[in-house]
Image (cartoon, rainbow, N blue to C red; front, side, top):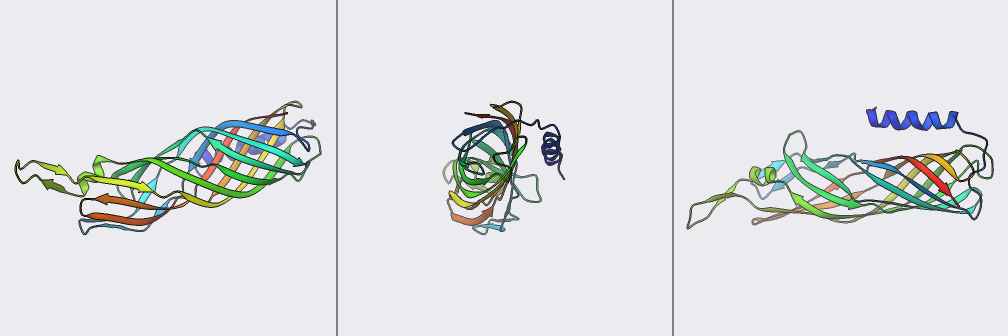
Length: 234
């Protein structure tokens, strides 16, 4: 288990132990949760054959932490509907099994979730489970100069100057299923500690464009998303 996952799990268990006997949210209430949200992709992709110039093993995608915000409306004591938002996440992309930097991308992952609160209407800690749908929009994709250099060089016929093969990167937007678990630990009747966890199905088609043609390949990101922060109800 990674250090980040261990910290998140430990925080979740600790908050259960210290929960006071306070009612936090009931039917008709809104809950705003704010905290640090980390997207940790479990990325995989097919090998990438770029116009016969080079065959790459696929890509890895690193994690990123941003400000996460969720808004939840409790339409029943035990049922709510929640929307996850965040400041844009930025991920560096590298070639699998190498130190070669391939590029980077930004994305926003709004996620709409139906939540079930098994202890809804009771005092004290409030765990919840959710099932929903995610839309991930990618933007600001860039190819790293290291990848362009790995593709080879082109020579200007007049000047004889050599330059790396120019390349571009684009990622299709994604729709997918999202699973959620979390807990609110009330501090009083308005404020609570919160820890949340999502698994999101994010599949995209990547396109690397060069002067010799475009190469398309599927990428599965399927990240775990961890969020620790505070919640406010009104």
